Image (cartoon, rainbow, N blue to C red; front, side, top):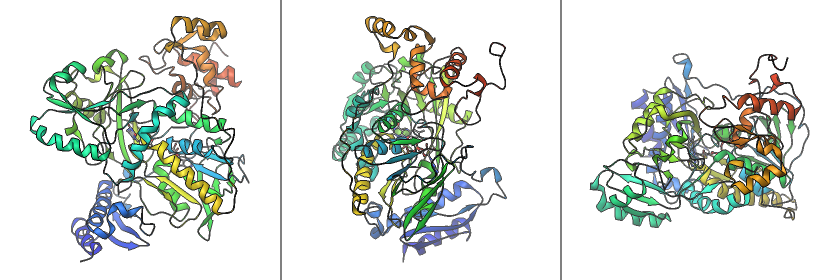
Length: 591
Ligand SMILES: Cc1cc2nc3c(=O)[nH]c(=O)nc-3n(C[C@H](O)[C@H](O)[C@H](O)COP(=O)(O)OP(=O)(O)OC[C@H]3O[C@@H](n4cnc5c(N)ncnc54)[C@H](O)[C@@H]3O)c2cc1C
């Protein structure tokens, strides 16, 4: 019996005839109407499950065979019954001007997350007119800042998947890249801990499996674990150490890639949302944005949770994104000693869930402890709110391995939204039905790790496609991979500080006491190649306001510097762009 028939039987049984599956143009199309978002996701997962069983269509062939698409889930949410679950439309910037009208870039990159920025940087190795459009007021505002910052070793990934392929390559690239971009990176390793001795005999087989996957791993006994990580719970009997795990600041890395791309000739247009496309004969002819219509030769889809919408605009939707929330807590630095040597630690392998590694306790690159994330399906692609349930749930879960954790140590929390497809793999390929499109889609975890490797392939294909269309693409002879960071006074020794302050006295004025950030750093952050003019933008670049007081002390001072540097009234300074002004009128001091 054909798998579609079997699948329809099952869908019929579960959803009483309200959902139907059929094959269309190499994709598996789901149609119907359901009242509950989780049921819609369940139908998508069932579709993949039944398809996977059909050996002809085994998932690993999916992207290697251009005739095959994925599951396209068009089941509509019956908003009448649960209107709070109806998906809200994409947030679009309020700006409407003609700043980009009529431009004809060689390559248009849609999305300023880590995928888009690493791709723009790779492309800038060639003499090309590159335009990156990002709908938010800054780079890395979606998943690329709202994640754990782990450069994963890849122990939980299936060999043959794109995730595994790009994760291994990306992990290996990080040391060199972070050196070139002057971004802090620490390959501290991580521990996967076990509390049940039962697992030990099979562990050695698993080690062989990891070797086969290309993931370095070693078993660490109880005594050694206690010595290396005294903060972990006593009942952990042993751990597996993954020495290739690293930690990085995800938004610093993304912004650094964006800055380096701009230094090498790429252009970045913030507050610019792609709204629609005009296609002709399987090619994108024009791309409409809120800042005018552009006419690119080639388009790269790196739009995160909106990547399937972009694919649909280009007539090339062969996958569906089903957003999955994940919330994390950040603890006060006072408690950063919960983990000592390894710093980055994924704790308790038993916590792994079906489609996520299960979160962990992580010692971030900035020496905070981060706890989470969880994994919750949601129809909302931009709801970054945090629930008490998520935070308490993850802290409770990880006290099982790190007993000193408690919610009183928390200084802030955040939510990120992953962008998985139903196949739970990356979609990194040339367009199936659109000749001048490349997708870097479905980039859920470990997308931060994989991005530099994905970017190399995407840039190579872009050059091949442009050359095949008759354009000469010479290398950019002036390409410089090095990007200089903003100096951090807190990381300097006395001699270095004194030299820095001698050179620029603003570095002697400390404005953020929690994180020890000077006025000089704040001013520098406002003069970088990618524009920054908001309190959050400064915070993400130099960490003012990231400490225990969360900007209570330095916030007004940062606002004042922004107003002076940008020549705008204080009440026009915004938290994160758009309508997020902090003051509603002149203050006593500045009236
Ligand atoms: C909670 C959580 C924890 C994670 N932890 C890790 C980890 O530790 N290690 C790891 O390797 N990975 C991790 N990930 C995954 C990683 O964060 C993502 O895979 C990665 O950031 C995806 O980057 P991206 O550029 O593809 O997408 P995004 O960062 O989402 O960027 C897409 C961008 O496109 C823009 N955009 C969308 N539509 C349009 C449009 N129409 N016009 C213009 N712009 C548009 C968006 O505004 C957005 O900025 C985690 C993810 C989450 C959510």
